[in-house]
Image (tube, rainbow, N blue to C red; front, side, top):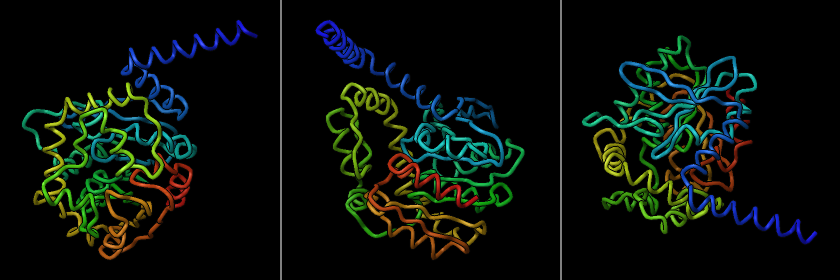
Length: 304
């Protein structure tokens, strides 16, 4: 028994050492593990000069998942397996984000990204039975759906940007010229997650947090430019103006504890959209697909 305990202790110490010494590799390995559990493959496709990276799983009617600001295709891993039981699920990295690299001088604002998304969906050769956009991704998806109704049968706005909502702490900081997302120090990362992102914050080991922060810091100029266009530029509320053009049935999926896009935004969407149903989840924040994956998957499947 003593030898067993010593052996287990040595294994634990080795695991801790690996996390501290090779955090980037540990993070990649964790994403690989989650992809395996979700039954998803990483694929790439060239569309109009853009190299798209995306996750794909399952067969059947097409479900497309679009991440938010500073996000990636991996944000959707907790719900992909359930959705892929009877559907073909594609979770994209928007150009400039995730595994893709921003091109110098290119426009990555909401309208330009909506055109890229339209080109990607055209390359699918079938309309999306369901298009799901989270936060910034909802804004981009909505603009695309308004301009290209033939590409989308139903749409989900999940904690979506693009409309004026009740002023909260996050909004007040933005109006003062701040960017609460601009967290490029490891020490601030956990506080950022607890203050704005999650209702119940997942534990992130410090070396892993450092790897995430370092990756974001390398693209901070790109992040700043996109944030300015999305929140303060002339396109900031363009989606709100175009909501009446979105004729497809829509689901407005929010968490009642969202501190980034206040839940009052759902009512603004409902007022502007011709057809919509609101689903308000309790006890979660800005990342419902990660905080309450079963409830989110059920809501999305209910829309199909």
